[in-house]
Amino acid sequence: MCLKESLVRAWIWCRRFRHRCGYGVHSPFAFDLITRVIYEKHPYYGYAVLDKYCRDFPALGGSVSKKVSRLLFRLANEVQPRQILELGTAEGLSALCLAMAVKECPVLTLDDAGKLADARLFASCGNVSFRVGGLQQELLSCLPSLEPLDFVHFNTRCPERALWEELLPKVNGKTVFTIEGIHASSAMKAWWLDIVADSRTGVTFDLYDLGLVFFDLKKIKQHYIVNF
Image (cartoon, rainbow, N blue to C red; front, side, top):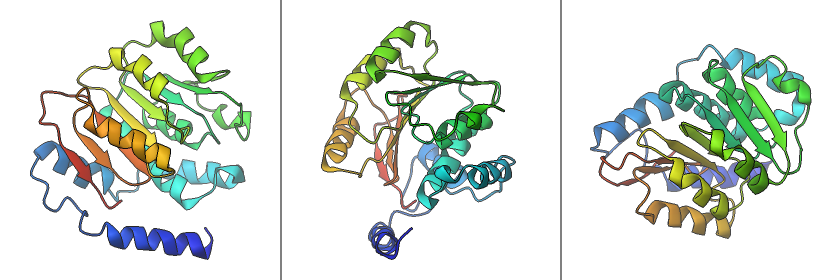
């Protein structure tokens, strides 16, 4: 990370400092997620393996992606989804983390450009399927088999409104969507605000680098900003 980017991120962290450690959060669900998953410092069993992958595949680098990917690992480990869908494989680190978190869970990652750094990355993960093609076309072709839709990771860093609408009829009270780059551009910020305000979404979390969306509408709809 260059000096300029480090200074920008330090400024962002200070600006969001009051939203730390679950302070002021009264919801037991939100407080538990923030303290036990988002801020969890325990060295999970998979971290050493993930670090080795990052050394073996330099294209996976970047401290921000590592931090976010470790959170995805913890979140998937907490939710224990029966099926995971990723839209946008990118360098492959997030798909790898999700697959390692729940080894019995099938992970389907779709990419429209095939920019995966090295196909060997998933060689040791028997639960990852990787498909390349137009994202919407690939999603529509596999959507009928995506039952249940427990965990969806948006990893394109672009607004995916059409894909979002295709997926919404499949969500249930246990579904969680994770969205990378919610502050990456003005278009992403606008899409994220629409998601937060959408009556079809429940509790949402803004972690700056990542947005979390839950669909349990039995819980009071609430939006949390977390200094992650």
